[in-house]
Image 1 (cartoon, rainbow, N blue to C red):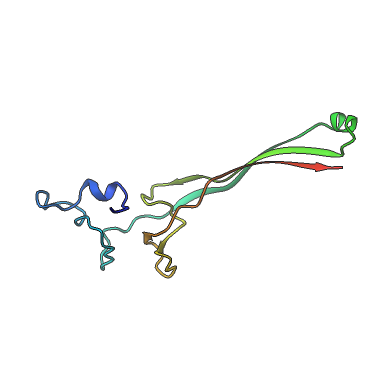
Image 2 (cartoon, helix red, strand yellow):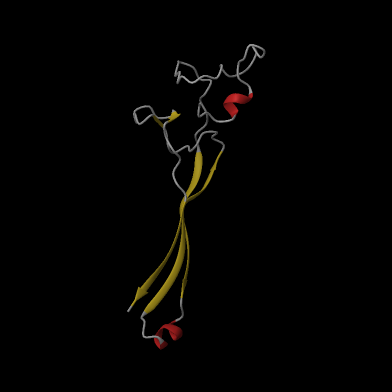
Length: 121
């Protein structure tokens, strides 16, 4: 098996498609000198978006609490990019971090939804 993005298989070289724009698919990780798999890695990422609500003082005074704030935080949740790989911010060649730009053996940043409350007495 092989873990390659779908675009890699759409127009690849085969015995019957010799004028393809991409080389043949294979299980090896050839990183020959070529610009064929170089993409624009520009992106816009919202690292953290937080929505919160502070309960009015008139309510917290009745229950003898100073301040209560509830929130939801969206971390690394929205990325705007045309980059076809996993994540334009993550690049490694099987853990060799000196090979940025090779999406092999890496995972995209995880998206997180965090719910929380801040209570002051």
